[in-house]
Amino acid sequence: MGLHVHLYVGLAVLAVSAVPFFLVIYLADPVDTSARVLVEALAAVALLHVALAIAARACSTEQLKFWDGLRLITAYMTIGVGGSAMLIATPSAMVALIASLTIATIGLVKREPTWAPHHYHRMIAFFHRHRMYQ
Image 1 (cartoon, rainbow, N blue to C red):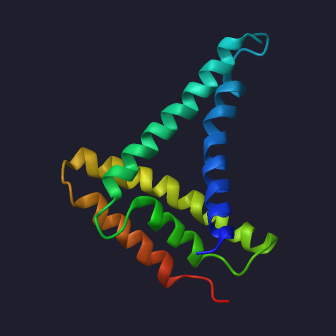
Image 2 (image 1 turned 180 degrees about the vertical axis):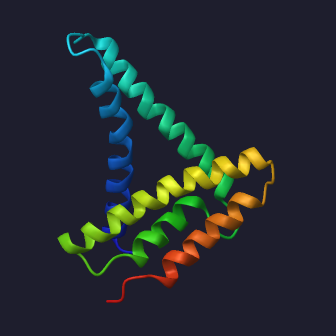
C-alpha cells in the first residue's frame, strides 16, 4: 500500500479524535477558560484511544490485524492520489473506525471471542465489494 493510504488512515484517526476533544470544549462552561477544560478534552481523546486499542485487540486475528484491515478498507476506497481520493477514502476510514468500535463493543458484551473478528472481516468484505475502481 502506498504512503497516501497511511496518510488517509492518519487523517481519519485525527478527525475521529477531534470529535470528543471539541465536544468537551463545546459543552464546557463558556466563561471557564481554565486548563481543566483542556485536560478534560485531552482525557476524552485518551479514552477514545483506549477504546480503539481494545477494539484493535478484539477485532484482530492471526491472519489480519486490526490496522491492516483498516488500511485495506482505506485502500479499497482510494481512486488514486490527491484531493478527490482523500474526500472518499478518509470518511470511509472514519466510518470503519466507528463501526469497529461498535463491533468490538457488541463482541465484548456477547462474550463470544470470535464474534468481533468475524464481523470485522465481514465489514472489510463489504468495503471490498463496494470498492472504488481506478
